[in-house]
Image (cartoon, one colour):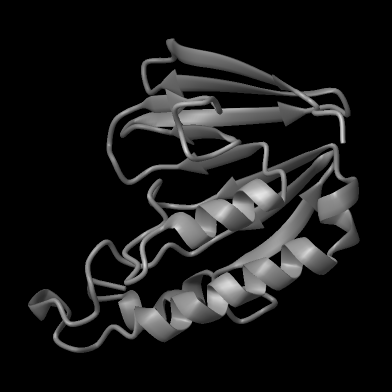
Length: 174
């Protein structure tokens, strides 16, 4: 959304859907890729009134709601994973709770994000609003996700090759 190539991004990273949120299957994983837009409102002066993320994100949220309700794969996949840039779902006028609610209702197992430039991992639990594992991959890190029908294993490594964290998520009983 920013920078000299922002308006040509679709030429570099085309999608079948013509948008930057979509779903794909990879073995036992149903992957949902979300475009978390920007981390500031559209009228922030650095955007020079060029961003129109509010209507785009509203359409994306409606797509996500419909997708998780109607896709047979959301219901049948051993694992559901969301990949997105910002761990707090991007800037949203109404906050991020509607997105968390959809993810919780869809029994999302794992959300992988970046943006914060440092590693963090928050498992589901009574003190957090989400029922999924939230992994934020830090700067100069990569997360490898391997899935079987019974578990997904995530190994986060730094550019030095050292393992930062290993997470194993067993399949939930549905």
